[in-house]
Length: 318
Image 1 (tube, one colour):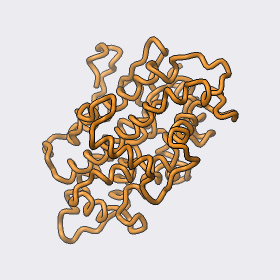
Image 2 (cartoon, rainbow, N blue to C red):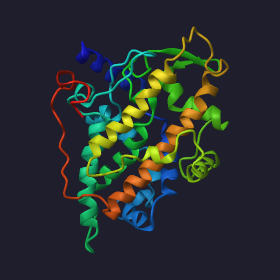
Image 3 (cartoon, rainbow, N blue to C red):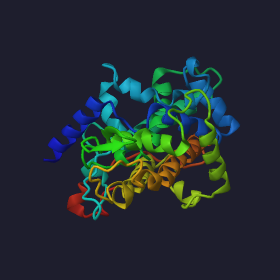
Image 4 (tube, rainbow, N blue to C red):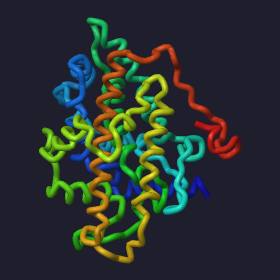
């Protein structure tokens, strides 16, 4: 049954064209993260990205979605989420060995691409470095997936990540997944779209709040795990943090055909999407800074645990 559920999720996501956050929101997360990059990291990004991105992870942040829709990149489509087994609002949990599919998930993708980027950065510190697609892709995937892992419906398997939940938002029929991808944050910011070329004033305000540490969760908690030598552990911690919103808010009420924009659901979610987007930006900037600075145990190797968490108990697997 688990295999059938995961295949259904994949088909639903592909059919809807849905990944996590809309492309312009991903761009904005990248532009926000750039506000936290050190000069050394900015220079490294410029070395690794292809020239058309002008050294900007903000401009490159949405690439992973379009690539996953191509014949060449179709293998990566399921890297955008992890399909947890939840029964909201009472039970939400996420385990790597149970919930990450054989073809990969957002947690394993962050871990694997971090390992590739580590090698690229080491090579780029030499004077004769020329970037490769493997290096550029790794940076673009990390930029994108650190955004994906904060979108609540990409750390939940309920209703095919919300794609199976038909809802109304602003008088229009849509799916719950699309509401969380963009509708809520557009309403919050009072825009129809964000720029894909520069930091939006609304997002700039979030950057200021990050720096002032004025969110309802302290920013220190967002980056409590920020060690690139343990990327699976950190990515899983981030996914579990996101998964908690499945029970705490996303499915905490019965929709009953109400308009989510006017029922109070959207306004209640405004602080959540602001928090999640901001977490993505600060983590991304800090993750890249740490990779470039080398201030972590670079001798450690990533080892993906394979013991089934349901056999050894909830704390036995990663």
